[in-house]
Structures are given as C-alpha cells and as structure tokens.
Image: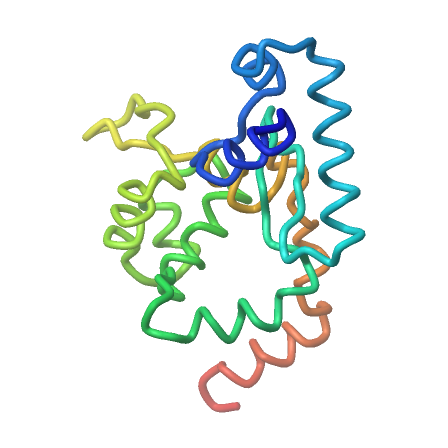
Amino acid sequence: MTPKAAIEAILFVTEAPVPVGELAEILEMPVVEVEALISEMGREMEERGSGLVVRSTAGGWRLYSHPETYPYLERFTSTATARRLSPAAIETLSVIAYRQPVARSQISEIRGVDSDSAVRTLERLGFIEEVERLDLPGNPAVYGTTRLFLEKLGMQSVSDLPPLADHVPPAQALEGLEDSLRPGS
C-alpha cells in the first residue's frame, strides 16, 4: 500500500476534513511530503477524468464530487436512494447562513412561516447549532452554521457565501410586486 493510496482511502471514509498534520502523523511522514502527495493525487484524478476531486476545506482535506458530475448528481438526488433537505429546510438554512446569529422568531419573521420544524431538522443533522441565549424573556436561542455546513458546501468560512445582492430583484421589480399586492390594485 502506497502512502498516496492510504491518503485516498482516509479521505474517502472520513466524515470531516482531515488536517494535513493528522495525515502526516498517521503516515509517519513530514507534512510537506504529505502535501506533495495530496497535490499529486489531485493532478492524477484530474488527468484520468475522475468523478472526484481532492479539496482543502474547513481546515483539512476531503474528497468531493467533480463539478462536471453535477448533472448526474442532480438526477440522482431525485431518486428514492438520495436523501434531500426539504425546500423549507434549505430556505431556513439560507436565512441562518446569511443572518447569523439569528433567533427562531427572526427566522420565522423573515420566512413568513413557522420555522421550528426546519430548525430542529437542521440542528439534528448538524448544519446549525445554538451559539448563545439572548437575555430576553424566555432566553431565546440564537443559531449559527457549523463546520459541517462549511464542509458540505466546500467553503472555508461563511464569508465565501455568494453576495445576496446577486440574487435580489431590482427595486423596480419589488415595487411592482408590492403595488400588485395592495388592496384595490
């Protein structure tokens, strides 16, 4: 078994990014040699057209699906075998990611519907966590995203999220929508 094959196997089975220092300890090799092996492994995967890529994320290394496999993965996610988040959970996760730290009441206000179930699901799956309690009646919890959230999206930090402005309609469109919803319009 080569050290490169061992790295590949470790990155395949891990549920979290593995720091290069930990890989170096396991392989009993210097960190620079492990980094060189990871780079070589990444190049070889790309050259052979692998469906996987090796990527640094959230302080470690992990295997991810190659971006060009997206159409196939998208089709796969619609099958019974794939497990998906509900649209409500995705919307709730988006609110938390962009507005964190944020309380359940704020999430529900932004979404316009009760979000308790989605918050519980996201917390159970490990995508969000309670980051503090507010000094208000009832001591409401406020939530933020976790390392797992960053890892699943392949990001180093929430600052890597795309700007919201890229996804907001222009002011004229919003005004037109508001006008159409006013009574007597």
